[in-house]
Length: 508
Image 1: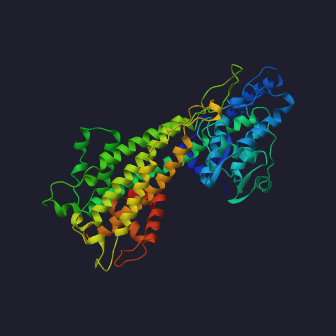
Image 2 (image 1 turned 180 degrees about the vertical axis):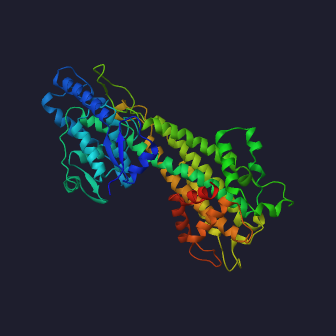
Image 3 (image 1 turned 90 degrees about the vertical axis):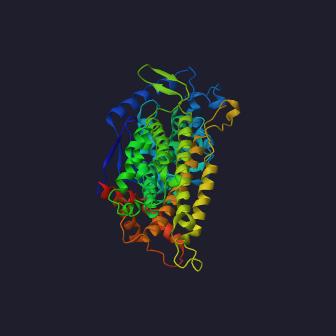
């Protein structure tokens, strides 16, 4: 069955479309108007390359060697040498979804028509994407200065038949991968090597998928918090709209609205209307304020990413309409670096307050429930160490929340004297998102156990939907068992979006 088409034009790519490409769900095509722009910019590059006037990246060296003029007969070697010399990445390869996105984002930038790439080269990159030839790109080695030089060089290696690629998920030499896909490598012409490696696409590839996961986790955090509120017989009053109307932060109001929908129809809340408790702990009462501020951080990061994935980040930029080729600094990753630092901090907030809610449930002096939610506690340890695991993840997340965006280190003999560390920020953000996913899965799992002790009284409709989904995969724990498997099962429900969708359906 044929896949839906996605037209790229360099200007209109959406984050949700990027997610589709990461899953290999669509066929990517170049928009006709973009093809015209690409050809126009290439015509200008060819004319400059045929002349005698020095032009950076076309007939000169690179970086600190920009003043070195290169003979016309050596221009092909110049581009090839650039790719080979810059392919210095180390560490694990980017996961396939991120590597696919990296290739897509580079194609989208080239489609803007400010790069000077040949249609033949861009066409090969798009064909690779559609035929599942995915470059092997080591994830370490970028300081986000002239963009992500090393990661993008590894991508470019495959276009010239060097390096390694995955074909249909199997790792092999790139020549073999291209051959299996019915493709042939290209010989790079003037400027094409530089065109392929200048830009912020690696940090954006990691960053975009992290952002989309973070937005999912923000919704799951509200669901987990609501489950805990019901499991602990917490008050619903802190979520009343009049409270948030007088402090109208958009994120705070959105979370309070979300909580009210999830908790609507609760029978449990009616069981403690006249209880002696005056106030709940902050981890319950201040969910809108804490989760809301995290949402504000994620909204900032989304805005940055939406602009960046459709931006021209080459150097130099080719302006065919004015017949000018201009060097600048659009490759600098500072916007993405700051955004991804904010994502990491926002997710750490969600993990931190989630772990405190888990403590509220497993601590009998706080919950009024059996110790560690275990029947026959003492013989059974229950969820004691689940809270410890969450605490460990929160501790490491706090360390990873140290900002990379302020941690410049000069490179390229001082020419690149202020760098963004954007890829570092993106990789940290990805790791924190994985920790947050596990922390929230632990809270959902523990809250389901707490809700078991409240039966047969029913929680709010949204909470009940989440609880029933969890119980369809993980049974009540009446005696100790290997909780790792339970956490893994709930984590899968979180990552797939199944919990969010179940709650949305129940509260629509």
